[in-house]
Image 1 (cartoon, rainbow, N blue to C red):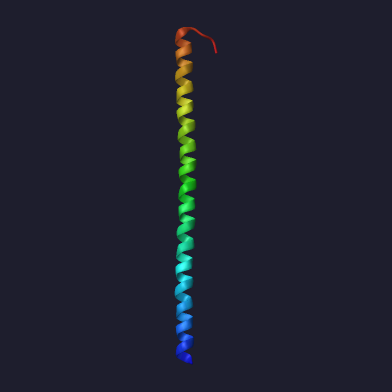
Image 2 (image 1 turned 45 degrees about the horizontal axis):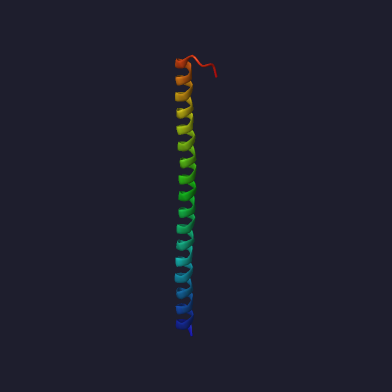
Length: 66
């Protein structure tokens, strides 16, 4: 009886351990995807800013007022 109980408890512990590891891995993947999305957003904004600044410099050189 004690042996069966011990096997059940160890089996449940193993399953819960794998479930916890899988959940943690899934959270890390979601967090990494969110960080990549934010980084892409920042890079896009920086590129637009640089492109707009270059356009303003070009207008200033041509004598066009914004």
